[in-house]
Image 1 (cartoon, rainbow, N blue to C red):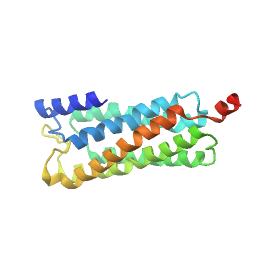
Image 2: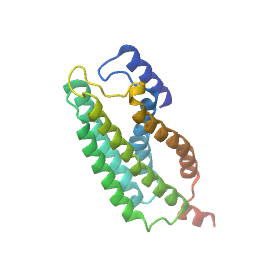
Image 3: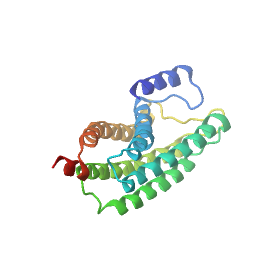
Image 4: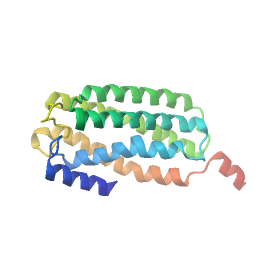
Length: 197
């Protein structure tokens, strides 16, 4: 994903297709958004160590984000009629759905891996908040429809406020991700501990 992010940065800024120049902060945020809202949910939903109730929030998120991906890519690159308000609406739906599903799991953290996954579910839900801010910022500062549509924030001092927030989120996720991956991949479940004893 890191290689893909670097390649995307180079292609977007070199060839300047629709969407405008993109900053490094926004490229890494995009990478993490895909990782946290599509790749990791698909892997967690398929983790055989977890009970089906723990698969549910991640499967739902993966489905919601796949649907958004197809629709949004069409609007961005074919119809050229994407509005940040669509993204904000979808973010609120995803965040609310995950919050409800997390609430149903709050009493079921019986194993090491479940506790790790519960925290990850909270983090996954919480990072929709900066995404809502980013989308609001786009509608307030850029035209996002038509041939000259801007979809990305460039490296420009005029946009230092949103780039600072983006960088802070990227730094947090960069520190959090290896800790989560280690605890998730090496975490024991109740079934594992029972089998070992």
